[in-house]
Length: 126
Image 1 (cartoon, helix red, strand yellow):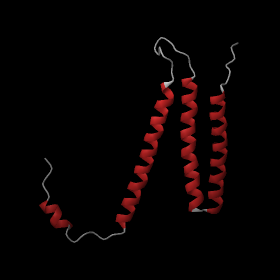
Image 2 (spheres, one colour; image 1 turned 90 degrees about the vertical axis):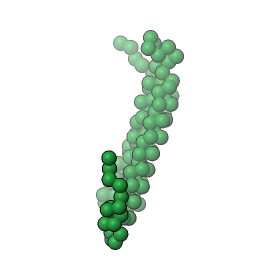
Image 3 (cartoon, helix red, strand yellow; image 1 turned 90 degrees about the horizontal axis):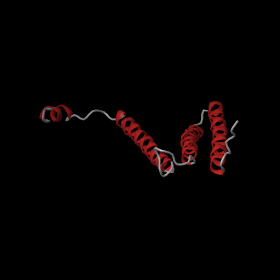
Image 4 (tube, helix red, strand yellow; image 1 turned 180 degrees about the horizontal axis):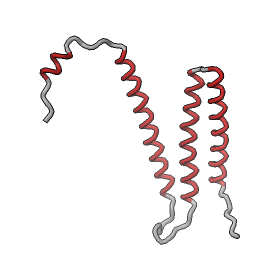
């Protein structure tokens, strides 16, 4: 039986993941009992941190693998790919948040009286 030694980076990522999971659960429970929007935003933030830390844990595990036939220089690029993925995740979350706010702010406005004229004068799609 082969035992695999856990590297310090994996252990640190796993501890951070466990602590963030506990905090997320506590924040969701606090939100459920208080119905506070501030606590909800903190819970969502912790949930996003949980996703990011899960990606970090995965990257650290993959990056620790030795070189093989398909990866002659090892698997170190996994950490860079996960960092890029986290950046994309953050960009998507910000984009969705801003879009939701923009749509919500326009829902309160009445339609422009010039809208029928603008639609009539706009070029037709080809």
